[in-house]
Length: 317
Image 1 (cartoon, rainbow, N blue to C red):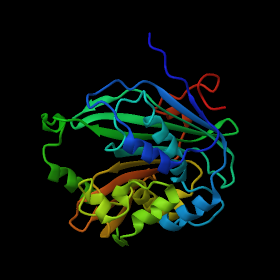
Image 2 (cartoon, helix red, strand yellow):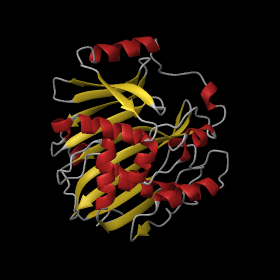
Image 3 (cartoon, helix red, strand yellow):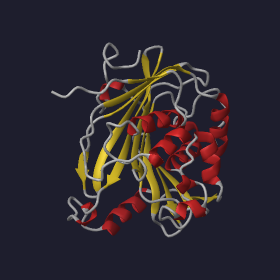
């Protein structure tokens, strides 16, 4: 029986820029490997007020005394990278793709709150384009769960893209048509996304991945221009939803469809559902979606679809 590596205990958040540099110089085997349970924990952490102010400014959130719904993802991301940079993790971090995000807020967090953060990864699953794995995050205040997330990453592997596509809709255009019906009564809001959006969000988040900064550095990784951070797009959408995103308990699900090149003109749309949920999407001028998701009122720990460690065991205390 294999023994899980010890929990990585941190006294302060790791530097995201330093973790990206570690990822750039790390060497990992090209072949697939097992993903063991890896955990990192940060106790007694208070978000940086300056970073919060920069985040509000670039995403459009008001300074209302509370953390925006999506902000915990920002201070959790350096912990995620610290996990994926551990020698036990089998894949190269650079090149992994953020494909989905599912987060729950159980109550609004005051901006000066003292928090404990636990993040972990374990296992993977085979998909058409390679391997998917889930990064789990649990945020507590005073030992009580207040925010959680599942961040799904894709690692492309050679030869996987050519396998037969299974469980694919009969027509991609049919799926697009269903989305268009959903947003048929929505009033489109045009956005102009400036060329410096990636650099501004990098200052707020610490994510200085070169694909987001300049066209020149993005071309080194196969992009014609720099691309916006996916979580900037999600944060901007949540800020645009106003009061709907200010409820105490919320669930937000997001799917990243294709990169948003900088600069761009895009369209933001929302559609209120009968149950009070708000569907949203950001689409390009050619009609193809960049991000699509749903904001739902309510969140309960009972319906968590993640393996939450017990506070008496590996959980945060």
